[in-house]
Amino acid sequence: MTDGLTEALLALVPEYGAVLVAAITFASCLALPVPASLAMLAGGAFAATGDLSLVGVSAAALAGAVLGDQAGWWLGRSGSGLLARLTAQPDRAVLMARASARLDRHALPTVYLTRWLFSPLGPWVNLAAGAARLGWARFTLGSVTGEATWVALYVGLGWAFASQVDRLGEVLANLGGFVATAAIAAGLATLVWRKRR
Image (tube, rainbow, N blue to C red):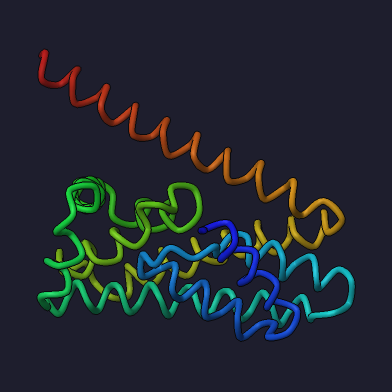
């Protein structure tokens, strides 16, 4: 079901172009399950064929992602009941706790790296940053630079490897899963080591 929805959504990229890419990246930064990385790869591929503008797709993806980050930060800062509802599920509560702990130690690198390298934590870091009252300017600096890295990587790879974008998407999804799993394993190993000491 999810694969069919992803394919249908990606089929709309050449028709709706940069606007759709912006909407998808915005939604992904609010923890909605949409294929943002694949949409950027597709946008880059369509830009390589001349169907879309490379600058337009990149700017739209960046704008959507930064606005999504800002919305998440604001939701966390407002302390609304939405934060409690979003973290009511155990797996989401674990992600939120992990994001908060990381943010307490290293705010700017955490925001930057969770935009692109540890992207599954990104939406939760947005909420945690707002809830922890991390300053807007500091959060925004990490957000904009991290999202610019994410957009440049994915749109750029889509543009460079337009003829192999399906295969590239699979490889990057597997790599992203590996990096996230390795980060979780490293975090758990650190916790075990500290408890033993």
